[in-house]
Length: 219
Image 1 (spheres, rainbow, N blue to C red):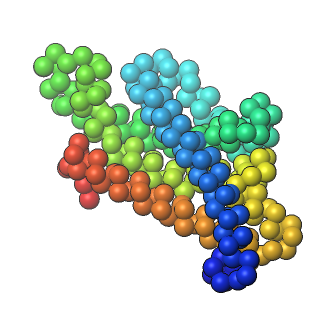
Image 2: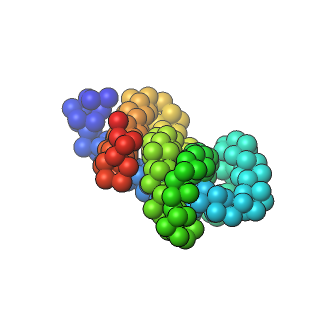
């Protein structure tokens, strides 16, 4: 792989192909990842704040998560097209459910005594959420974000593989079709490195945020 990317006569062209594809995959994975986190956290807050929303929407969320993503991809591509929207939706779904489950669990684990203290200060529902529940839930949110980071890259690659015809997912398919196994493994190695970097960045952000807003949870 080193020779393929850096030492062969075609190394510059090979790197250009990989970097162009990587830019596309990073866009797909990054936008879908952020969308999944935001929607998951927002729904978790809604479920805890408005219990009726939890009773109505939780079965739908569980049903969506129960369907294999490889089955959902053709449906989403038909509905949203083969562009950015379809891939982002696929990546967001993969990111969304663990974020929802972990955040909701964290919000429900806030000690009752802490709520009593906030009520004694006549804190509103939203003030309690912002000042107590969300800071207490930050470790759970970041745990979800760490888990979802490599999964988002994998989901984006799978969507590219099956639907869009671009990104590193397409490079893998094309390399396999042409028996270019060195190129295939080079693309796989790049994806692995990106997933590790993505995970490390989220872990770093977790330490920084927790040190400021929830120092008791810093490991």
